[in-house]
Image (cartoon, rainbow, N blue to C red):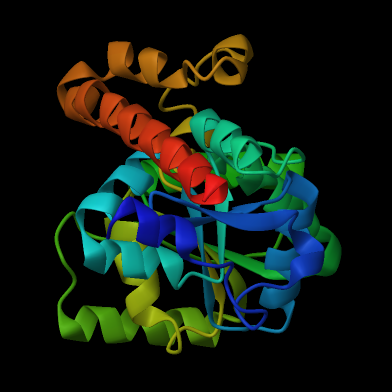
Length: 274
């Protein structure tokens, strides 16, 4: 997709997103990002979950945008989501540059407990898919202590390999029979988005891809200090703590994003000037 095509794309149709729960949407390098806040996002997700609507929600960082720009099939998955939040501060700044000054960060590890709080109040069952059995034990223990009314209706730490067709069918049936309304998926990108897109229409729950939130909330990984998050430097903290796994994402992906988005802004100004 060219930059001019990315800029010319309009907002998603009303059927994709209910406007009262966002401040609007923009395309960043061809990928749709929806501006919202924690309360609006959690309220919408839990309401969908209460009705057991089969939907999926993406929590987007710079890495998602870069991958979507490189891979059309992944871009389609992201753009077909029911809701895509701005997880990374660069995306928040991008939304503001593109005309949504109200845009704020909606970060997976912080959104997860807000969803659980809303779900506990509404009596909506919450499920967890991903991580390891130990991580899930600690995660559920922590969240149920914070929100005693939280109904944990499903949990599974799947094997670290693709599921067989039989395993996936059993997984879908188990979630549907459990009464889960919101299924939090912690597989990391792009696995979680691919899984959610594939199972929309089969799983009777609203799926939310929360990335590394399980590890952070279970206390298995340290989060960056709040000041680093506000300054958009969380990537540096994560690079220092996990250099072998993340160096390519941050040292190659972040500069690529900065150059491409700057070019998008220039192209947009030229287009408007004409």
